[in-house]
Image (cartoon, rainbow, N blue to C red):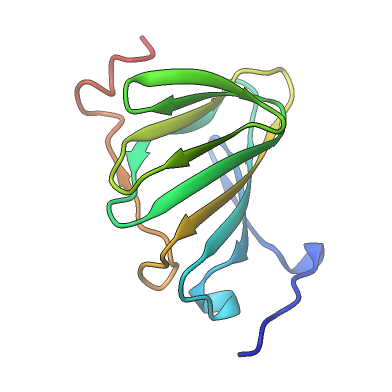
Amino acid sequence: MNGKFITAAEVERVQLGWGTTGWLSRPQTTGAKDIVAMEVSLLPGNGHDFHKHPEQEEVIYVIEGSVEQWLEDKKQTLNAGDAVFIPADIVHASFNVSSQPAKLFVTLSPCKGEEGYQLIDVFDEAPWNTLRA
């Protein structure tokens, strides 16, 4: 494949309990080998709970809203224009702390598996299950 244009109408959107993921690029849709790219919308008061990507680095860039971003046991509020780099196998979480949906651009590398995206949830394990108590 020699590249691909992706219109807004073509973005595959998946509704989740905490928001929406819009797949911009992954192996099965663009033939990507090294980059997974997503537009993520977090509903007010919701978030992507503690998880990690064992073999993938990640960058989260806030487009709109305010996000309580966790990087292991450290947290910081990220606002529009702020970003975080997450090394492979580092536990992290993102929670919308604004009254409007928060919009994020997320990219991971390299691609892993058919979706290009590997994820291990750890939100029900110590110490992650107590950090936001």
